[in-house]
Length: 290
Image 1 (cartoon, helix red, strand yellow):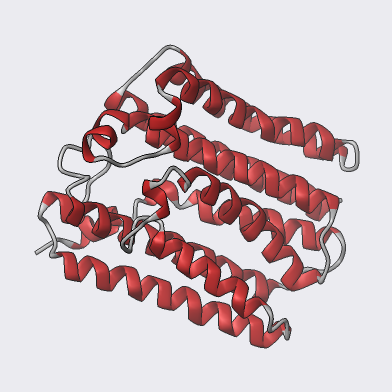
Image 2: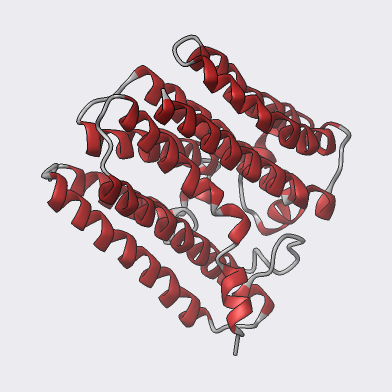
C-alpha cells in the first residue's frame, strides 16, 4: 500500500505552479480593470489545482497500465512502481476531477455565466483523455498543444472573463506567456522521456521533432514570456520587474542547450516551473498596484 508521502509525490508537486500561475495572472488582469473578486479567484484557483492533480493521477494510472512508465527516469509513479493499485489511482484521479467540477459549478452559479459549464466540461474531459481512453491525444503528439491552450488561454482568460466579463490585451499577453511557460515544462519533460516514449510507442511532439529541434523549441518558448513582459511594460512600466525570473530560466536553458539527458533534465522542469510562478507573481503584483 502506498504511503501518504508517495500519494503526495504522485500529485507531482513540482508541476503545480502550472496551475497556480495562470490563475494569478487572470486575477491580476481582472484587478487591473476593477473586475477582481477574491472568492471567485479562489474558486478558479481550486478548479485549476484540482484539475492539475487530477490529470497527474490520470496520467500515472493510464501510463502505468500501458507499461509506458516501466523504464521511466522521471518522478515517482504510483502504478508504474507497483506502490498502489491502478484502481486506487484511477479513483484518486476521478476524485480530484470531481472537486474541480464542483468548484467550477459553484463559480458558474455565483457569476451567472452558465455557458461556462460547457467550458468546464471540456477542461475536465481534456484532463482525462490526455492519456486516458482508447485513443488518448497525448499519445498522438497533441499534448503540447493542449497544455498551451489549457494552461494559457483557458486558465488565464477564463479567470479574467468569469470575473470581469471581458478580455483585455494584457490578459491575452499573460495567456500567451503562461501557455509558453507551461509548454516549455512539457517539452523539457518529453525531451527527457524521448527514449522510453519511443520504446513504449508514445508519440509526443518531442519524439516527432527529435532531440535537437525539441531543445530549440524549449529555448524559444521560455523566451516568449519576457517578450510579453516588454509589451506589458509599455502600459505598466513596473511589470518589467518580471525579468527577475530570467535567471531561473537561464539555469534550465543552460542544461537544455548543452545537451543534458535523462535525469540531468529533471531540474529543468523545476527551474522552468519556478520561473513561471515567479514571473506570474511579480506581474500580478504590478498589475494590482498599477
